[in-house]
Length: 201
Image (cartoon, one colour):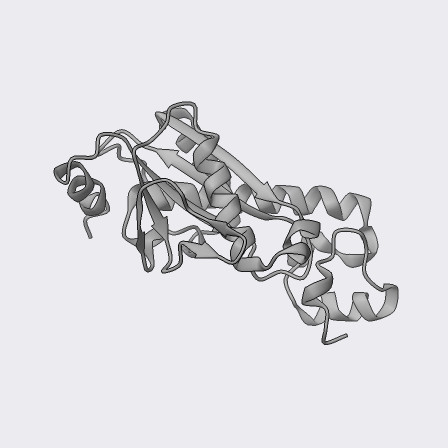
């Protein structure tokens, strides 16, 4: 599979500097939603790079510093649980991705966005862009962003596990698992829970 086809097409269309962008943490009941944006040199071969969901935590941890080292620019951003509750998760995802793009040390003139959505009620991708379904499996730049976003969020949830040990965040990272629901019923929500995600309780 050619992981550089979308980047090359964007260059052929006249864009000069292209970033990939992806987010992590849309589904959990707790914590931030994270996003990352990455500009890789065209054709930069990072061994093992693919969609972060297809990688083990150990593989993602190995790739994380390699991506940071080899990228022309990278940025990680997030939206807090409170803002997710104040808006909605789609808007929060869009805001996190645009913040990641805005955080790059050099400004891209085009972005490759994972998924099929580019705006919500209270947030949108404003950088010129295209959306790519399963882009984290089709674009090296998006795959790199998916790894940075996923690892950053997992590390954040591990820190939250130290603050709120009763929820075992280190085990489920805030996702709606049986264990997480059991702890929620036992202890109620903590400050990083997304209240709008807890309507089943």
